[in-house]
Length: 151
Image (tube, rainbow, N blue to C red; front, top):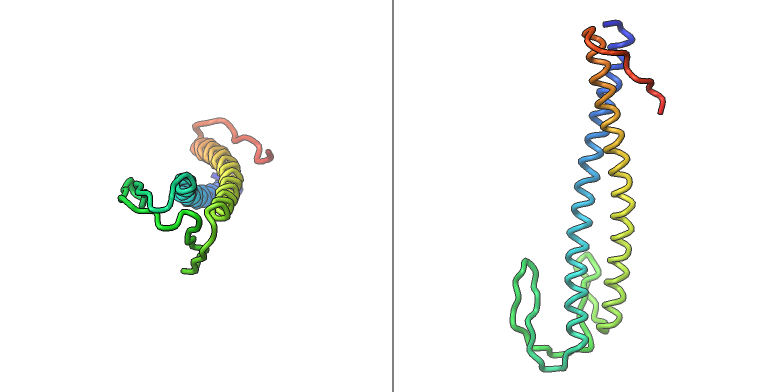
């Protein structure tokens, strides 16, 4: 194997490893956003359910993890909502629904953007893997010349 082939093989291998690490990171971010979306959508469903109820009415309240508790609605017109860093605010059900829906919309956009980036990285990783295998086979004298590095 020539020095040039060895350097090219090493460069492709390094890029392949970096690309695979980025794929893994993006996959983790996508999973995290999906978890947030599930949580916010669940909260939105509860807010919609509260809207149609009367004060003092009993209802099953989803507390997460497919667990429900029997609850009595004390005040159907306002809710307490966390806005991050341990800070909670009281607001009307309508305002809370609007805020949560905006968060869901923002997360959906982030998810779409990251999913596109993820697909591009997966495709690049496949190209690099193919190039690496072809170059390694050529270096052993077992295959054709590698494809052009230009895309």
